[in-house]
Amino acid sequence: MLLDRYRLTSVLGRGVMGHVWQGLDLRLERPVAVKTVAADLLAVPRSRDEALRRFRREAKAAARLHHPNTTTVLDASVTDGTCCLVMELIEGTTLEFLFDQQDDGRFDVLDTRYEIAVLPARFR
Image (cartoon, rainbow, N blue to C red; front, side, top):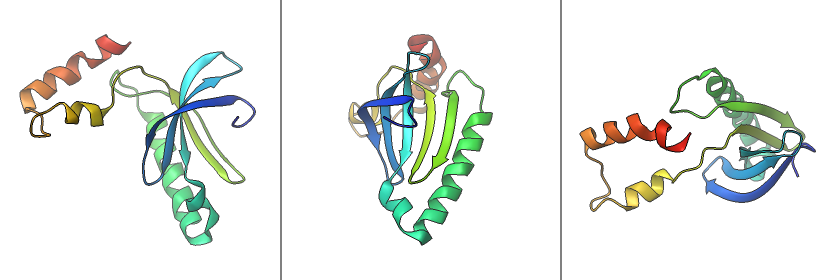
């Protein structure tokens, strides 16, 4: 449970800065994606300051985006020991999976432009 509102159910991805979870907004009863900053980055004062600065910058930038190919930011919070960015959950596949499907791990530019153009219609 996060912020007495979001139930985290499974990890969708991991990165240097933290995890992205599939979750449920208990108040509005809707699925969400929740990005959390790694606890070890927040535990050390030097890395904590940098992690918080980067998190706040990302949250503000993402919240300003309004485009069919980006997810909508629903909430952002910095509390004692927890930073989270709550976003619309979009069903689909991962970029890693798509790269793994390519013979050489690369995409043809024209094919990729087409895939990006039709993406919102497939998953919304």
